[in-house]
Length: 137
Image (tube, rainbow, N blue to C red):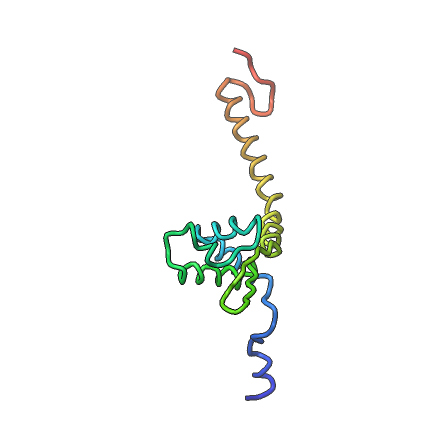
């Protein structure tokens, strides 16, 4: 393998890119069980067994969901022997919120255009000119 080829290989120890982080967060949030796990962790850290209690799935299935949340950076897991405690990390959710808010201006402009169009349609329906004074009936 040449030095050029070695540089082309991904570094497994490197921090994930912003896009990879967003992908992992949105994937993690796409499942209702994982969202429920996050909701349960809002108030305090919980043991995996405590997190699993309300779900009608196996402890192993809950553990797999938790691992998805850990890989997305949404949950931190600390092990002491066989005991595993999970806590919420809102940093990645904040990053996703910042990304979503980047589209707020676009959507607000779209809603403003829609509102103006609907107003013009209503004015025409009432017999007035678009952008002009409305007629009273």
